[in-house]
Image (cartoon, rainbow over all chains, first blue to last red):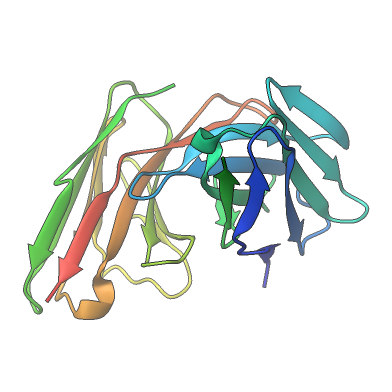
Length: 112
Length: 117
């Protein structure tokens, strides 16, 4: 069974620090990876997508992918209290964004 | 990105009844999906809503329990039938925009919060 694993947290970081969120997946042939942010009581919001090994940066967010290690991470620089949310890692095992398998999510708390 | 709306936003239902959830998109999309998010858990794909044909269900989900309609490229419904308290969840529809590897992104509607008593 294809799985996506995340540490459930909570991960607590002080304001201004770097938050590092990690995700591992079970299927070596997966090609599409996504990070969603979900505030309590809200639906998931897409933050980043990554398809190739290496880093992809978008503002304060950097996604890192290592297919050999089956590992994808999300770095949030200069963390803000508004970043406090649950971050969901999603993997498209079929190779497209059409069918996503989600991890259980990591709850991030940014403290003042 | 597509603007997705769902109705109702929340409901409280009695066990044994059925609820139909509507999902409306502001543009035509090929791929639409229905997910469930049980309390404190992550998202689980229920089915792919296929336009003009029967939905494709994931393991553990059946048409009799979760009938789905997709009459056109902007609208779909999910019915939760013969409800029990275990069906209390958030139900989300999603759509995929873009085409081709590296171009597709999946967006979620606001969700329908269902409580079954």
